Length: 403
Image 1 (cartoon, rainbow, N blue to C red):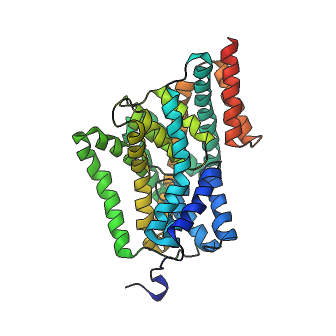
Image 2 (cartoon, rainbow, N blue to C red; image 1 turned 90 degrees about the horizontal axis):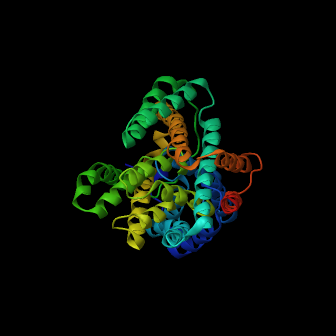
Image 3 (cartoon, one colour; image 1 turned 90 degrees about the vertical axis):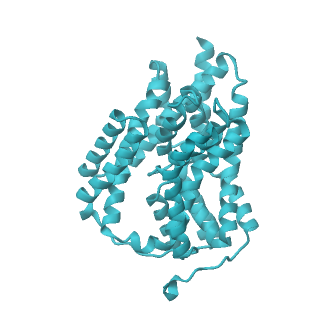
C-alpha cells in the first residue's frame, strides 16, 4: 500500500502545452545531453516552476543511472508528471522530431552528393565524429574514473570490447563493470536526499519493466520473421544497453547496422558527424540510419522503425522505474554497481574511439591534424559543436579541392 506521500499525482497541465514548450527546446537545444539538462532546468525549474530543484536533481540522477538517452528520459518524465501519458508522448515528440526530420533529410539527399567537394565534406563529418567522441571520453574519464580502481575497470572494459566479438563484448564489459563495482566501489557510498513525486503506480511500473525485459529477450527470437522486426530489434537492443550518455550508443549502433552490412562504415560515420550539427537528442541519428539502410525498411518507414526502436526501451524503463527509484537509489549495492558500470562505459567508449572511428576516419597525417584541431576547439576553445562541425567540414573541403 502506498504511503500518504506516495500517492499518484494527477496531471497539472495539457499535452499541447507540454508539446509547444518541448518543441521550442527541440529546435534550439544544441550541445549534447549535458547542455540539454541545463536547458531543461532553466525552462522547468527556474522559469515555469513545474518541479522544484530537488525533484529535478532526482530525475537527472535517475536518467544517468538507467540505460537510454538521459536528456530524452528526463524530458519524458517531466511531460509525464505534467500532463500524464499524453504529456510524456508530447514531450518526446516535441524534443525529438526536429532533429529526426533534419537527419532524415540529410540521409535523403546525401546520396545525391557527388564530386570531390561532397566526398571531402562527408570525410570531414567523419573527422568531427572522432573529435566529439574524444571529447566525450576525456570528459567522462575525468568524472567517472577519478581513482585507480575505476581507471582499472575502464581499461579492462576497453580490452573486453576490443578482443570480444560484437555486442557480446559490449554486454560483457557492462556486466564486468557491475561485478567489479560491487567488489571495489562499496566504500564510495554517498547518502542521497530528495524525492521524485511519482506519477506512475508501482503496479504499472512493474508492468512497464516487464515489457522492457520481454522485448529485450523476445525480439531476437522474432527478428528472423521479417526484416522490419530485425531492424526494430537491432535499434531496440542498442537503446536498451546504453549506459553513460548518448555517445556510448556509437559502438552499439555500429554493431547493429554496419556489421551486418546494412549501412556502410563511411555513411555511418557521416551520419554520426552530422548529428553533432543539429539540436536535440543524439539518439535521433537513428532516423538517418534507418533511412539509409540498404535493404527495406528504409526511407521514411525505416527512419520511423529505427526511431521507435532506439527510444522505446529508455522511455519504458524510465516510466517503470519512477515509483521504485527513491528506495532503490539509496542502497549501497546499487550505487556500487553503477560506479563500476559507469567506469566500464568509459572503457567501452574509448575502444569505440579506436575502432571504428579512428580506423575508418583518420587515414593520414592531414586527417590527424584536422581531428586534433576539432578536439582542441571543443576542449580548449570550448566552441559550440555546431561551429566545430562547420569549421572542420570547410577545412576538409578546402584540402580536398586543393589536392
